[in-house]
Length: 325
Image (cartoon, rainbow, N blue to C red):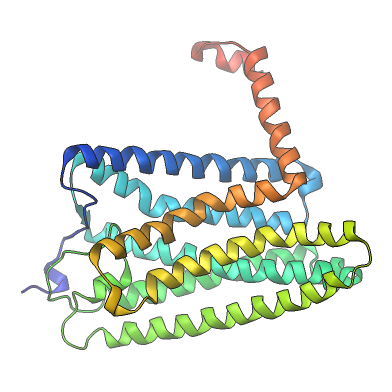
């Protein structure tokens, strides 16, 4: 028996026991991580470099890509390192940092998706007032509110979780530090305070979900009243990527955290956690780039320009600064 003051590290759940499977998991996670970095990095760079994409929708999309990069970087690199070196440990401080950043970025992302639903509502249902409702100042304030709400939520969860006495060892049945898994190590009923905070977070998340649903009901009603088929198609094309990302984010979260206890198992929890924490940050960039022609054109120009620069400047690392100039 031990308490939280004597715990210096936690043991994460290993993906496999054999060295071959550990290396397989490392290469699989490396491929996923690089795909997420490439996709979200291209979106961020394309939006930043092309002035015609400096609109509220793309401003929020840039913030979404930043959050996706941060989210997948919170969990995957440590899992890759553990698989590569055949270890399971994470320090107490590292675990607290992982909890903070994971809840910060995921909460901010959900808040931002709610803001993006309002953006689509204003663009389609209130087009004449769109510039007033979502001016540059309003967009910055909305994005800051999303990031700020995520930060506050993360601080509360981290402070509550790591102030609870832990008496059930230090082994977590998860590949990263997750609050429900840490609560299983708590003493007696000491976890009820954090469980209450989790319920408050769930209620707030449900309120955001209702707002998104109501927004899209109004959006679809407005789109169906558009007389031209081309106009309806254009309106739907700006909404479907966001709707797909929302569905992916919410559905994976529900399966991961709200599944019935009767079907819970270590292997299932591990699989759902991977799907919830890794798949959305990787696929969000693909979903938006597939359905948005302006973004695809900007990303194509960006990649073409990079390739042209590389071909026109075949220099070694020793002379790269001269070629760049």
